[in-house]
Structure formats: C-alpha cells, structure tokens
Length: 317
Image 1 (tube, helix red, strand yellow):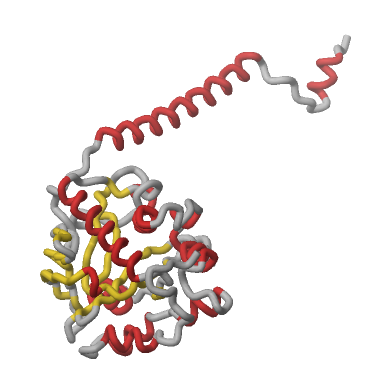
Image 2 (cartoon, one colour; image 1 turned 90 degrees about the vertical axis):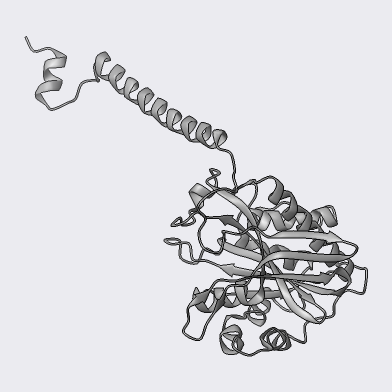
C-alpha cells in the first residue's frame, strides 16, 4: 500500500529537514556569531590596552614634535617643520624656529585636500583639512593635525579608528604643507578665507598652541571617530566660541566640512557653493608660482576680491 509520504518521495517532493540537521545549522550560526564577537572583543581589548608614546621609530616628517609656547603676547615655535622641494623635485627635510607677536596674526584660512574613495566614485566625504595663518611681516604658518606614522607605515582608515597611530599637531611652513601636497603628492587643494575676526583668530592660535603643548607633555592617540584632523579643529574653534561648529557628519567625513562652513557663513557665501569651490581651488596656482620668493603673497593676491570680511571683533553669526 502506497502511503502519502511514499507518493511525495516518488514525485520528487522534499521532506522537512530532520531535527538533527536543523540543530546543526543552529549550532553553526552560534559558532559563527561567537567567533565574530570574540574577534571584536579582541580588537577592542587590544586597542584599550595600548598606550600612546612619543618613543617610536617615526616616519620622516614625524620624527620631531613641535614645541609651542605663548608668553607675553609672543608665540614661539621650536621645530616648525620646513620640508621643501628642491630643483630636482626631491623633498629636503628641515626644521626651523619662528617667533611672532600674536597681535601680528592677520587672518586664517581653511584648506581642504580631498581624496578619492574607490570604489565609490563621486563620494566626496574623504579629505584632509588644516589651517593657515597670515602673519604681518612674516611668512604664513600652518597647523595640520595628523596621524603620526612609524617608519614604513601607511595610513589606513580602519586602523585609524583603533588607536593605531599617535596624534600629532604639525606646525609648518606653507612650503611644507601646501606646496608639498600640490607638487610632490600631486593632490588637489582648496584654500578658503575664514570670515572670523582677528581677535577670534588669535584666540584660535592660542588654543592650538595650548593643545600642542599638552600633547608634548602627554601623548594621545589619533582616532578617526574622536580625534581626527577635522574634529580637533572644530573642537578648537568651539573652545574659542562655544557652539561655533555644531557636531555634524563633517566631523567624521571632512570632505563635507566645506558644506558646513558655507552654510554657517564662515567662508564666502555670496555665490553658489560649487562656484565658491572653483574660486578657491589653488593647486594649479601653487604649481605655477611655488618657485617665486614671494609665493605666499602671489597666492593670496590671486584669491583677492573675496566678499567683505567681518568687522574687527565680530564673527559671522
């Protein structure tokens, strides 16, 4: 006599998985989940156990910490980085000392160096940002907050979120940060004037100097989520004027920092944003004028004619 189950098997119908097969699959999922959890815990635990240090075999350009002090209205920078390209296109290392009166700081610039994010063509969130400060009667200085790399080490976004690099405030000449990026690294650069008062600019420099001095005393880790190139700049600005730069996606995706500053009115906003970006694109200008002794003056002259600046002692609201 043919049973119903026999008829199902004869016509190719499948039966329900046995209890043992179902249990085995469930156990497999549990094992996989446990393995993933174990790896995650190991990564977090390892990162938590690490301690930042100034004593490592550092990559060229990261071997010397700047020493920055402010006393009696004078900013003194020891180990101002001054790496330059020579006539043969070779980067020559160098460090100098520079002192300036805080009252001689005239204005601030916000520079953005976007990077491609393959395979996501067109994604503009990845970038590096830094400040440049004009000084009366002296060359400009720049402040770039970076992951301090060891010899042979490259920067990786994933490792940058796991405390794998120390944090470094690099005080440097414009030839070092801007020229080297445009010529040696062939990167794209945008340089936006910040529409803030001289008083706020000076206080911003003082805050950056204080943080640099604190880092010299006690190292910290670079972290892509909590202490990256842009979030550190934003926190410095907020220490000068609370709430100046609200927390936004730009703190973690610096490529969007221009959008935020444009919306807040801290960079020229008298024309559409795309046009503003084109107006302050400087890579070609840097490549054309970098060899001139008055390079910084020529660069700023090419960017002249920006919209009106805030009056003395008054920031954009």
